[in-house]
Length: 135
Image (cartoon, rainbow, N blue to C red):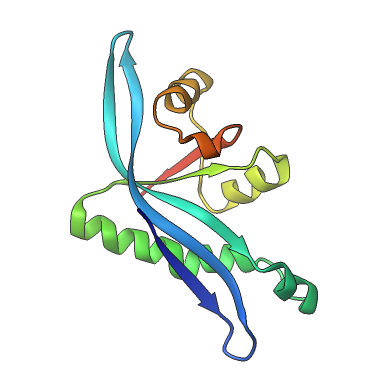
């Protein structure tokens, strides 16, 4: 289950959307044990292509949506229910991964990323790169 939010321009149609859902990050601590970290998954994060085409001079819309809407909402949820991380499964594109890094997301060490991907990553995110940030 997730909740999807539309971010609308006051004059034109919506220009972005994102979904949030509860989740957890599983990290391998020792060979046979793990730690689970309560978290929020950021899913379906996108900017409307028509908006980008109609407003080519407006840059960094995704960053604006993240800083103005997603991060504050995640921090508010964190205070209410005790989650302490936000994560995303990014498409495996260097430009997109670098963009998420500018928003404060990081990758896990390779062995931990493999562990996360083999234990909790949904099938529809296959091939995506796990990235996270603390709240």
